[in-house]
Length: 200
Ligand code: GAR
Image (cartoon, rainbow, N blue to C red; front, side):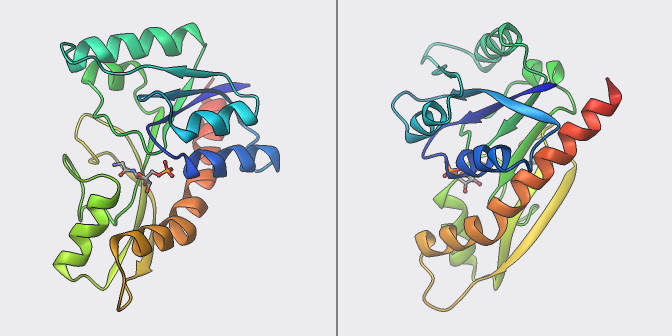
């Protein structure tokens, strides 16, 4: 069975959906065996503990280069026999060394229709704020394979969501999560795990 690590930095609603999908038998080609957070004290860690999944915290130190952080991440994941990685609200940009080590085996969920509102500086509520400021009528979510270009890897799935009059960044974020992210992420996680299992 493939070991999956979910990398988080915050509340972890996407993590929760993955844990639920595993509990309901919607993710069967791998098991979530580690939740790693870039921040201590975030609620995502509590969600993992409640689901009896091992947790780890790996914060980036101020004097640490992205490559040094990437190496520490590789060491932690290899020590836990991790085969596949899901970025579920992970707010650090990953170094090339890490992406190479897990090439084709890292998924990311991004809260817009890539190539709109993506890349460096676009994360979390900032994405929805930018979409509202630009006045787009459609936004959504994208699941993609991670490569060395931030939010630039091959797209696996997208779902469009209408922007409505009166939307605030918070309201829009919630709708995009409920109607797009939480549907796409478990589905694509299972699909990638199944295809990686076949390659073994
Ligand atoms: C989600 O909307 C996710 O798509 C986004 O952060 C939020 C995390 O929420 N990720 C990014 O912006 C990454 N570029 P969660 O912690 O409740 O899953």
